[in-house]
Image (cartoon, rainbow, N blue to C red; front, side, top):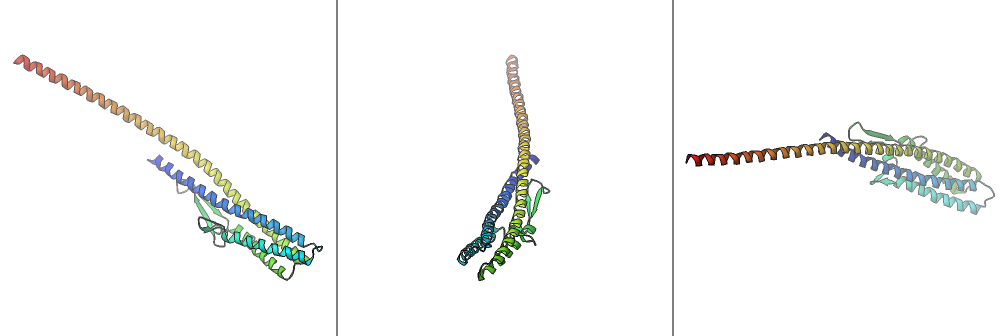
Length: 236
C-alpha cells in the first residue's frame, strides 16, 4: 500500500541520515585533533620566538614541530569513511554531497564544504602555508621565522574553526531532520496499523456473517429433507 511504501522509504532514509551524520562526525573529530595539534604548535612557536632560548632549545622545539606537522599531514591524507578519503583534495568533503533524507525524491540535503577545505582561506591552503613556514626552520629557528610560523598557525586555526562550525551546523541539522522523520514514521505506522486493524475487523465480521449464513442454509436444507421424508412416508 501507499502508507507501507512510505514507512519503508522512511526507514531507509533514517539509515541514510545516520550514515551521513557518522561521516560528518568523523570529519569533525579529525579537525578537532587538527586544532589540538595546531594549538600545541603555536605554543611551541611562541616559546621559540623568545630570544632567551638557546640554540639547543630551539632545535628541540623545531624537531617537535616537524613531527607534529607530519601528524597533521597524516590526518588530512588518511581520514576516511567507508573506505573513501574525506579531507584530501578531491575527497568527499571537497565535493558537493547530497543526502537522501526522506522517502520522496524532493527530500534531500546538499552539503558543500569545498570552499572551507580547499578554497583560498581553506584548511588545506592554510596547512600548505604552515608546512612552508616550518621548512624555513631547517636552517635554524629565529625570532623572525618563529613569528612568521605563529601567524600561519593563527590563520590555520581560523580556517579549521570555520570548517568545524560548518560541520557542526550540518550535523545539528541532520539531528533535527532525524527527529522529525522519526515522528512522521511513527505516525504513519500508527495510521497503517489502524487501517490494517480495521481491515481485519471487517474481514472477521464478513467471515462470521458467511458462517452464519452457511449454518442457516444447512439448517434449512436439513428441514427440507426432513419434510420431504415425511411427505413420502404419508404418500406411501
